[in-house]
Image (cartoon, rainbow, N blue to C red; front, top):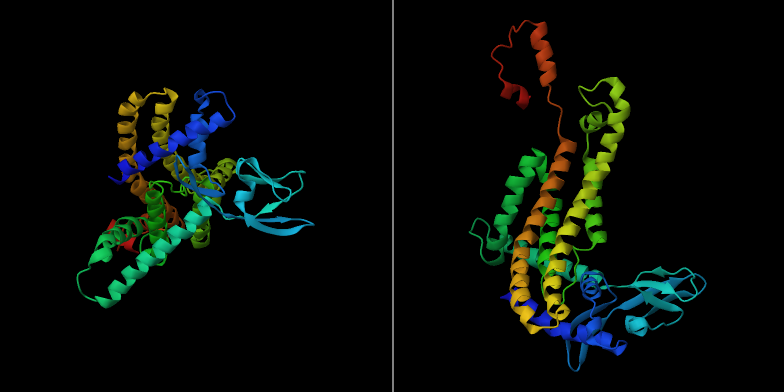
Length: 357
């Protein structure tokens, strides 16, 4: 029902988009679906809530800019909206620039920054409430929000952290849980009407991937670096090839994390908006009988994608950390010792005993 409401609200806003080009064009046939779609999935300096025949309901964010020689400027983004300029500043494709080409440093609050603050507050409120519930109900069955979230916490602990990281999983649980719920909550918030596309912003997903890379590298042991600079079973002559490949792999892994999350979330929004845009491309209400059901189906599918992408990102993060903290198993040393001693005193030792050692 929520997603049906999202599509219906979006249908109410699109007539305004279809009429906007008429201000500078001869007919409504100049509707540009690509421009409309990119406007909705990209970051901006304003938050467009909805539109009616009486106008647009928009929240303008503060522009915080520093120009060398002129100092810091703080003003509302309304002053440079719709192609306007103010104090030698203007917006080009939502990027702050100057009229004379001089450098400017942008520290503005944007739609994604505001969404990040809101989602962070929601997470703090939710999990503070859950933690308070655990303190009040020690030894009792969980209730309310605690009972809803506890299965996810247990799943991340037992099926992701323990299996991927091993005995040292506990120290990484706070990060893994934060990662999972941050991505999941923001994926869900991105499906609400007029919301920001936070996890569809490559800067956000890249930052999450960089954090994973930093934690992986600082958690790594000599066994991890030994597999990179001295790969076992590889002839010395191939080290000149294998070492660069392994080093590139360190960077490629977090890069794939960032791109996977960004691409999947953004693709879902683009597909939904593309179906709705068909109504105005064909300029027929009859197209809605096809585009709205398909858009609703994709929107419902995004519910599954939202938690699936959070799980995949968390799982791969745990696997990368697990490979960095994994201890060397002395199976090769055991085999050598067994041969040198002719199997004496070692015949009763099982493979599991060696692994435990």
